[in-house]
Length: 203
Image (tube, rainbow, N blue to C red; front, side, top):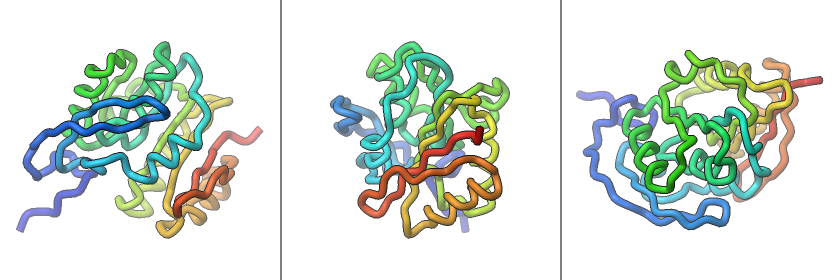
């Protein structure tokens, strides 16, 4: 029996049957390409929409990160608002990264750089902003390792914005970030069963 196919599989087993969908990203209507085997392939998921509605505009320049990018909604939104920035779109899923490249080219988002975690980490970017709908279903230990790795790359004045479903442990994750990682972790919104967390370095 083959292993189950998840959106966090490096090489999804589902057929790469591509199609286009129309989505609205922070007031901009865009047409994007998606495919089975990536997160929320047929629509903009509720958590990501909640995050997009809650976060302030990213800085105009610097290194920005969409962590667990899927087909790229957060990266595309950041690139549209900050065309002078480098936007890292990071995912373990090769199909997702290819879709990000296709979608970035389609909307003229030249600053988007789609990369695996290992590829991005070789550059050790000093991150001004992280936007993420993190992959909770990879398991608590893997999730904690993931967040510890990338939050460590926040610039001294950088901000991470995370959206997590309340019923998937948003409140316990907020406490863990504060107590175990030593960051400030503030809940800034609670909408449709999702928490938006702002994470910053302690002064």
